[in-house]
Length: 172
Image (cartoon, rainbow, N blue to C red; front, top):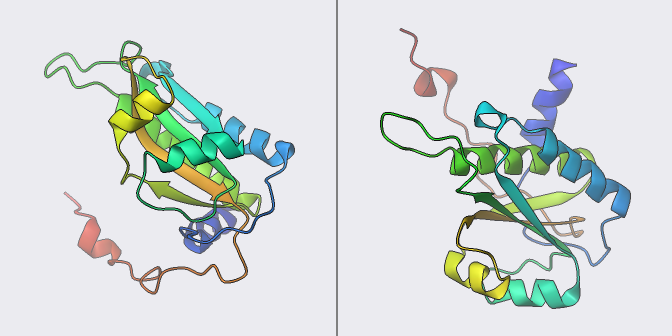
């Protein structure tokens, strides 16, 4: 069982070319359920997910980001800063971390269903807030674009390049 998860993590890559086939509701529900189940600090669940499926919504999204991969589905992963857990000694809120965990769960769940994704951080948060009428407490963290990988989709050449465990882990 553990090997299956490691293989899923290893095989998943950022898809930058999507087929025109729409993602089925059942698969979207699975992806959203994975996001819903993601852990958040003190289980505050400050996450707000905006799902973009319509051509109009996806077209509006293009005003907010710098890349386009022909996605047929997108999620704007946000947090409500008024609902976050806040660390007492330095007032750091959990929102970005919580949203990142949710997004990761969703990407892995998507891949498990044969749906590709790309995490987009290169976007204009202010434009997202304006174009999608987000309140000032709602902070966009990332955009997940998704869809079925096109026939020419492939991992980047550096996909399998990983630092060794000894380079990233310090045992104390």
